[in-house]
Amino acid sequence: MKVLQSLLFLLLFSMLSCSQKEKTKTPKQLVAEDSGKSVSDFDDVLPVYSISKDIDAIVLELNDYDPKEAKLFHDKIYDDILQKDTLFDWGDKKDFIATIRPINSIYIDTTGQLNIFRSLNLEKRIKEKLKPSYYIYGTKGFTKVSLGDVYFTVDECLSRIIAIKINGFDKNKYGHPLFCSEKPLSMVYGKDYKKVEKTINKQIDRFIDSIQADYRNKSGSTKIVANTDSYYFTYEDDFNWKKEFNLTDLNFPSRSIYRINNQSKAEVVWEKSLDLYGIPCD
Image (cartoon, rainbow, N blue to C red):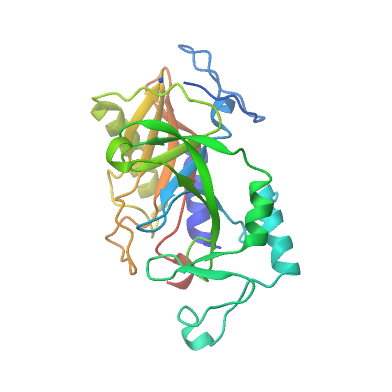
């Protein structure tokens, strides 16, 4: 889905010269001189979003726009469930959003930006691949949480996701949830990131201007929440998801990790984003 937006972000983040720890795997290695860390140290980090007023969740985007891209475990499970166990029906195509009909699933919430459903079969299969608890990092701090229900979303235009609800995350104490990891990360919540934020946002602006992109978040949207040595954990999100978006809103919430190299350039080493605007239907 979202061919234009997805290609834009893939191109952008492939070209940009961008307290705890988690070990992961990736074929690409980029070692930071000051820490000995590599890009692979962040490969298993997952994004966390508030997908509705009442649901904070680890989010896995479903891939249905790039047939050449390898299917991940959640894509394979979803495709298998969808083939064996019809989850929904689109109904009247003249007003498909209003008439999505659950079959072997149930409505959870269709009042917000995302049409959220639950399938017990899908939930069972997904949870078999996950740990029972994860560390969740928010805008103010982090804590360890247990996992709750598993949901999926249905839409012809927006990002489609599998969302695993997190239990026990106190927003008053830890802020808005942003990142997830199985093992604790060496994140330091600093107080002054203005200089690094400016470096990252300027590079994003230069690249977006160079390709004359039709769709983007407003300039200066990237915010730093924490760092570990020369690696910076960032987000683009106003936490104000609504039913209808326009081009002046923050339409593409994201979670990213940048490294500032020896030339004071920012290079992205990990990135996930969603399309809440619906580029394919624009």
